[in-house]
Length: 232
Image 1: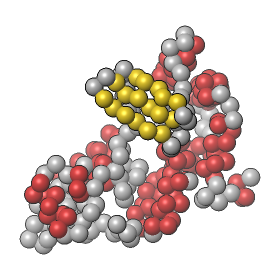
Image 2 (image 1 turned 60 degrees about the vertical axis):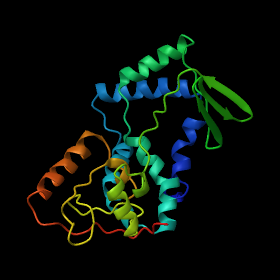
Image 3 (image 1 turned 45 degrees about the vertical axis):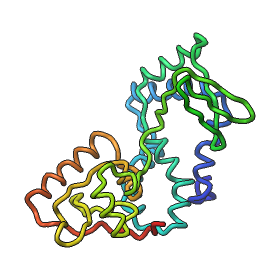
Image 4 (image 1 turned 120 degrees about the vertical axis):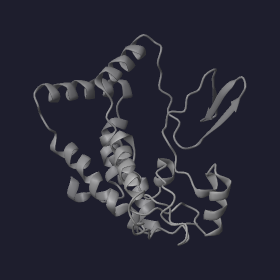
């Protein structure tokens, strides 16, 4: 029951039924359910509630302290990411067809695995076994980056010298720089924004960032986004 769950174990309950079943059988069942709901114009209330709640949490996350941010990342964050990461039905049908034809398999790695990339391919080591792939595509999406990862030496050194391990941006996505330089550099690179905005992605978010950056060119610098999350 929902009343018996907390932010720490809700994610485990959310995924429990899926984990207990064969992933391809689950995908087939889920596809049939999704197509039925679409055909009959049925909105699943709890799915829609989670989808809309991520809009609330994206404003809350930057203000979380370190302990609560860890709790969010290991629990509720997984639920939000799964719920609104929609995949076209045609893609699921193709995946099921590949599996039925014996072309596609699923290898569960967990978090304890090693990856060795060479000129001759990629080897994944997990559970005491090695799995070699001639071609390996890492499609897990973008990872959060820090100031030290910036490809612009002068800007990188300036941010690090100012103690900005993670670039701080204002509401209009101008970089938080010393007063004489503030408002002169727009910074909308999504991998560097993921620390404070874990849900920022996609065309819609990109368009919103672009619009604010365009306004920065003609407006006064805006206030700094609040960050209460410690940076080490």
